[in-house]
Image 1: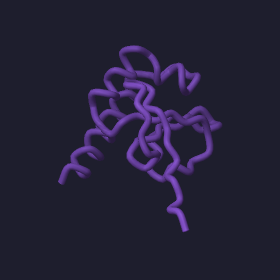
Image 2: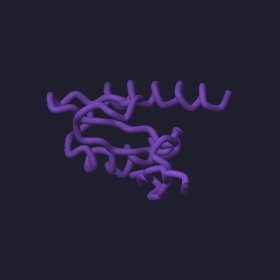
Image 3: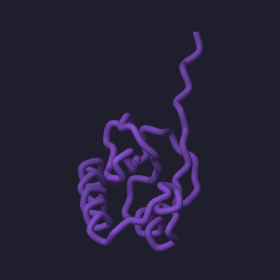
Image 4: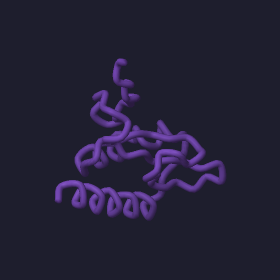
Length: 94
């Protein structure tokens, strides 16, 4: 029996295809709250990023995150997401 293939998604910053599990999902929920989705199952419009700060910075600078989520993102939300992504990437490197 063949192994089941893993779903792939594209990072909105560097545009590389990777396995869904290796990417970070940021979601805009129906109530317009933007948050990090660690389960990958939160309802709403999602965008995928590589698990590193460089891709996050590029997504903010080029506004590709705002375009993908179809919403403007405030500075406070950006800082919250940035700290969460940094914490996740530190945990993964250990």
